[in-house]
Length: 145
Image 1: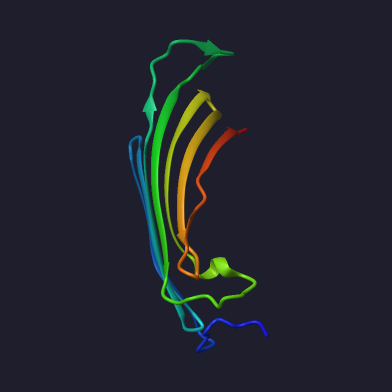
Image 2: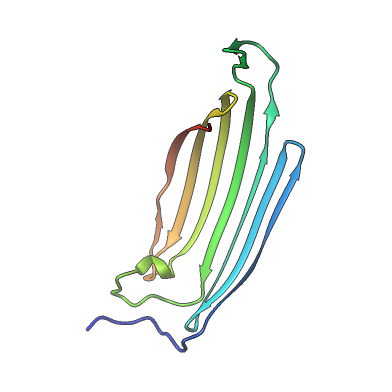
């Protein structure tokens, strides 16, 4: 038979707080969450800092500035469960302890179009205690209309 998580109640509780702060071209996002899902507690938090720099006009396309801004971003996230997953389970990631550091930069191409390049260093600990990583390099082209 498949082992089960050590659920001790039917209670589901989640409390937390979010903070958004915008000062000119600077932004800060922070989040904290404390969960208890059936007696399985975990805590998570995240913080992101970004600063947009407006660039001087060097060229324009169709009456819009070419390369109007650059915005570096750093984000840190951590999820810390206070329980172990069974050896075999359909959702082992539910009990992973993970920590993630994202470093990115958003390049404004023209107003409404930007390209974001991001490197994510993602480390996690499996229920067995084995450490793993799943780093990523991402690129996103965004067009707002």
